[in-house]
Image 1 (spheres, rainbow, N blue to C red):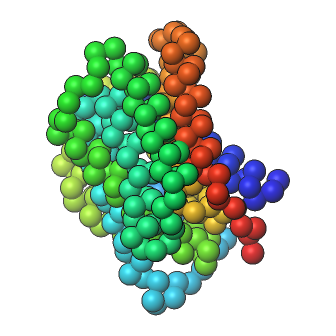
Image 2 (cartoon, rainbow, N blue to C red):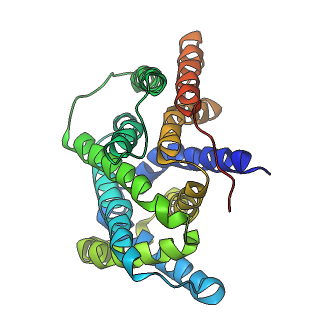
Length: 297
């Protein structure tokens, strides 16, 4: 498989996981487990898996001058990203949370432009505008009740989107130099120092015996797919693409979420929805049109 096909396959996989996570997480958070407790659990399982993997098969050493960037990755990719996302999601609806997350590509592009890593062209502006417009209309259409306004949960998820954009920018140089598992093990280890004290009381308050099988299944999805697999793939794909391309795939999340709802007979298809999905895909295509995915060296 070529680098281009590999990159797009990974981006599609992480998009599907993220799209499903909004609704699946709401099954367990906050009905059974409070948000910071979930973040602490994600840290525990990640440290266990990634540290074991690194020590047994990788054993990569980090250059001293790369440590400040790794600390920033832990801050943006673990601490701010996870804490604000799950706290925000516990206070708002999956639809509103998804709507806030479409700001990620804009933030990625703006940060990259400020750092002089990318140039803002008219084609990118048009692509982002089309993708945002289609996504916003699709989400509002699916919400049935319309957009509920800027609540605290929406603002927290928006902060999460900004932190994820900063993470994509910050982690890319490290992915050119180190294996993804090395960065994951260090990121989660550093982030865990912050998230464990914040989530400890909520973790102790969990009534594990009261969790339904749906809650256990949702928690397994969060820990395995949305944490271990998703974080690893999101870091690995940065070897092949720039942050703007990775961020632009978030436009596909509402498409996948809607398709899943229709498959479960929770929603119905219409000409309007088909047109909005096409609009989103065109936006993603225009944002990525000028990108050339370099070969792995």
